[in-house]
Image (cartoon, helix red, strand yellow):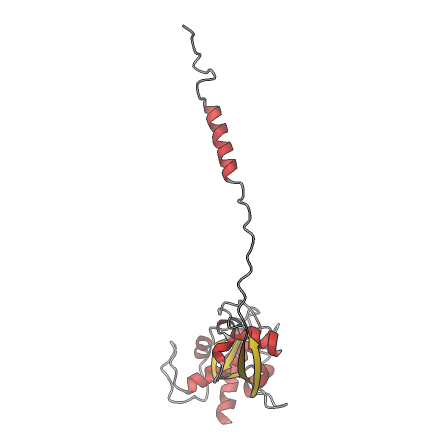
Amino acid sequence: MPHHHPDGPDRPTRRRFLQSAALTASAAEQPAAPVPAQAPPSVPARPVRLHINGKEYALSLEPRVTLLDALREVVGLTGAKKGCDHGQCGVCTVLSDGRRINACLTLAVMQEGRHITTIEGLADGETLHPMQAAFVARDALQCGFCTPGQICSAVGMLAEAGAGAASTVQPPPAALPQSLSDAEIRERMSGNICRCGAYQNIVAAVRDATGAMRRS
C-alpha cells in the first residue's frame, strides 16, 4: 500500500493557504470597470420673467437652473459669488422681496413675481448704500470674495431685526434699535463665512450702518 507523506502534494499546507488567500484578495482589489457616464436628460427651456434690481428680464431657462447661475451666467450680474454651492457659506446671498436667501439653493423659476436685489442694486446711482459705505469705511474685507454676500445679508438682517425677528441672543426688539450688540450681530450673521477672518471689522461695519440706517 503506498504511503503518503504528510506534506505531500495532496495535503494543503500553510504556505499554500496563504498564497491562495493572497491571490483571492488581489483579485478582489482589482477596480471594477468604469461605468460610462450618462448625460442627464435634456429639459426644455421655458420663459421666465425675473425682476432684478428694478429691471424686468425676459429669460429662457431650464426649470432646474438656479437663481445664482441665472444671475451670473445669463443676466451677467457676477456680484453674487459661487462658493460652496450648497448653502453653507453665504457667499451667494441676495435679497428676495427684502429677505435674504442663498441664490444657490433656489431655482430661478421659483423667483418669478418677486423683487430680487443683488449687490449691484443696493447703491443709488453713485451713492453707496449705508451698509456698503460702512464696509468701505471700516475696511471690512480682505480678499473681497465674500463681501457681496456679507453686505446683502447684513441689509436683510437689519430688516429682520427691525421687524421684530427673534434671535438666540436677545428677545425680538420692538423696532430696530440704535445699535445691535456685537454678540447679536455675530449671531444673526453666522450664516456668512469670511475665510479671511475679517469678522471684527465686519461687525463694526454692521454696527455703524445700523445707526446710519436708523437716522435715515
